[in-house]
Image (cartoon, protein in one colour):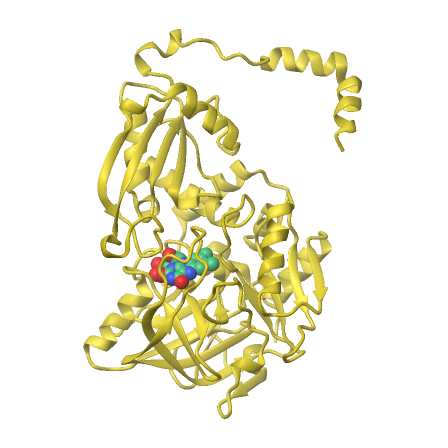
Length: 480
Ligand SMILES: Cc1cc2nc3c(=O)[nH]c(=O)nc-3n(C[C@H](O)[C@H](O)[C@H](O)COP(=O)(O)O)c2cc1C
Ligand SMILES: [Mn+2]
């Protein structure tokens, strides 16, 4: 088998080479792994990827990889970029890629590492160290950084979406798909015909496939063709013998199974990305597993959503910022200088930076950002700032809101696209929420007469740096 550039293991070797992989042994799967991941992300400015090995009270041949791409270097390596790229340059390169992306159809291989171990009888997922990630989770979640692979039974295109997957005993799992997501639409079609819905799930793969699985890939385009387009070469797949559905050839762990109409079990609660257990417990379709496949010494990839911190979801903020920026461009909004979703609030807080050119420019930018495909779902605040604000620095953004916006000018949009994960919407009203449009730019009419900013100018800064470089170094050095 020729080595593949979308094999998780090849990428992990690169990560280890740049010193961003930390191996940890002997941590229990019940709460401790999830808790430690959260604490590392909370406390480290530059968290490494964490590989949990030799997990007690379970099979010893499996390890768990967390914080896979919670750092720009690892993310850049996964996407074939220079690891020393800046955030803005990365967003710009992703914008170009997403805009010009030509899907590349996958290759189907005859054999693959995923078939190193094939189990059809006495399947026992409970023997694997599947974590209970958060203290109040209703079960063990094998699927967080996963791909749920289905086919549209009428149009025959393949979808691969990242949806959470919970163990339901030894040989069954349940999953949660939010309204409107492609996998749920496929399943609905099978159920409406009274047929079971075949499904493949992959639980560990190259981060490029994870990124494709959780990005807004256009409807009717397979995430595999999309990921192939990113690399400009085909992703390698194999056909599942039971379903005929594709399985990533270099997947670490995968299952094939079926969901049957009416065969539901309680799913959740699960700690969700907004930082709550908002969708609680609901009956959700169960996947009855027909076959389990895994590589020797399989690596489960885990991306438990955590109470938001500045580090987790960094990669998601980057992808989404690029897509919103492209949508602003497509809508003809000029002079956008940056887009950012602060990882702590992610979709709830979109920041757009513009160089104001005409009256109403800021409002136009905000409304497009709030309702375009990449920004519409589960948004809440859109803030527009001038080009002197550092949008990656929350202090700067709050300063702009505090000093340049007038609450009486905040616009409210009602009955926008929300969902069950929205914690502030009560159960009976879930589905809709409102948006606040905050124009935190200097008022256009008198922007040139706005009081000057009280800060050392770039010019004086450069002068002082030159004059007092060693003094500054000494003073700043003391802080460490
Ligand atoms: C770690 C992680 C977990 C996710 N879990 C879910 C989930 O449980 N259910 C869901 O509907 N979307 C979930 N998402 C969001 C979807 O993956 C995302 O909306 C994706 O674009 C859906 O694919 P689709 O457009 O093909 O439906 C998750 C995303 C991430 C990054
Ligand atoms: Mn899709």
